[in-house]
Length: 195
Image 1: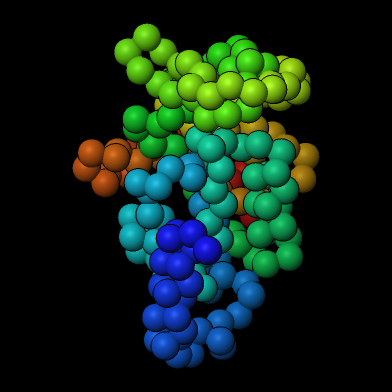
Image 2: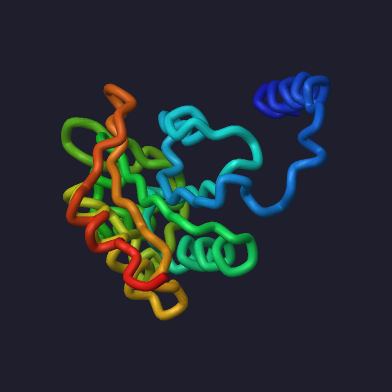
């Protein structure tokens, strides 16, 4: 067993001891909202949005992008579990700003091993077989955070399965201060148009 597995299981035992009434939480989130945000380990939506277990849905992926799967989760969150407001929250200093579709596709074509980023850019540090499958994926990279928040709110708002009465708010989380900074154009675009 790896050290990481041991640490996770030990933490879980401590968690179980304090589990308390959490077994009584309902499936629908009690505060009836959802957050789409990045998987970056520096972001803790429970802390920056004041959440406790059972409060809200938090959907995380690389960049906090409105991928098909993220939209699928948001639609389920609304349709079956009653959320009424959604937040799209990207963040400063995101790893998705450090590469393009072409860069990651080329790296994957060369090797499936971990790559590294240095002053020159991304490069492979391992050898081995690669795959051209990365060329068929839109990696949803980011070149401007405010524009990507706007684009994601727009993609969600225009999706045919997203009801117009759901407000969608656009924000950027500042990793240096912890502040949520509204992107007014995104929030305006995400306004509910029907009730």
